[in-house]
Image (tube, rainbow, N blue to C red; front, side, top):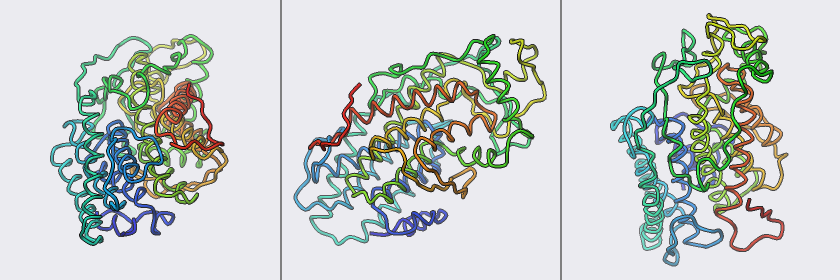
Length: 445
């Protein structure tokens, strides 16, 4: 089996971090391959989490069809004796990715040309992996069970409403979300100023594990006349401004480190920790499936809340022509450190995903205080930071959105809280061990 370095060089991407450069589990290899290919497809963060969840669930189910250790999600068949584990993983990942990434066209999903390039990229890695294996029934049977597992998850998600168009008209009153201006020059470059609202219907996508998208919906943003809103307003106005003298150099670095799409960041963190803790292939597959499902459901639930509350972003609020709170003062020239995504403020789904992923990791390893080091991806690739715990990482992940000026503190705090609830629910309700460990926590709320 080729190392992750060899596979990524085949794909034409930059070499991975040192912690990934050695031979690693094939599940983590295919996670990295899939993440890289979602970038080629130009998938936005939301469909990216759907794609990665489908890939990881297909891998998980294929492995447990070969040797049943954990509950399966969609595919309940069994593999032929001797089926190749590596071939099954590769085929499951390849077929699930190809179907997931071509679910729709247009903004957020990529053009047909970008999608075709992404599938070709994965096909190239798939061919390279299979070329390393001797031909025979074990290889063929592994491919067959991987393809069957992928087909099951693809069929299950075929009518999940991910591609449904949903009309949306922004409001114009104080507190309403409106298309957001961004810094000039853009940092990182944005395609245009005043983009229309993104993915207003994502809350209608069928969740992977949650009962429905409102299951853990937060209470809502603070009233515009409240002291909590004034606190939020004045904090982000001071620390998130493009040329802030309040924000430290380290806080600016934190803002850039976490600016990458959450699905990629936390998938990478889960893979790094799985490798450092010596997880086997089945355990790694379960962990990555749980983390990616939790993040996919985090976006679905978070976007349901975003468009339910429809709350304005800091740049709109701070530039608003008249004060709506006696303890706040508008600034028509205020600008953010980094670009504001074209969606409502509350809750911060970046924080929801961090809360969800970190909660899965905490429950999986039955402890929070596991130290790890991670390196960022695009648009600020190559930044490396170390963390002492999963909760610390989730907290800094949330803080980063205030530091870069694009979220109010309440959106972050309530986002982490919602994500924590989602992560707990996902962990307790799917992919559970078939033989329960005496130390396994079981709280199915």
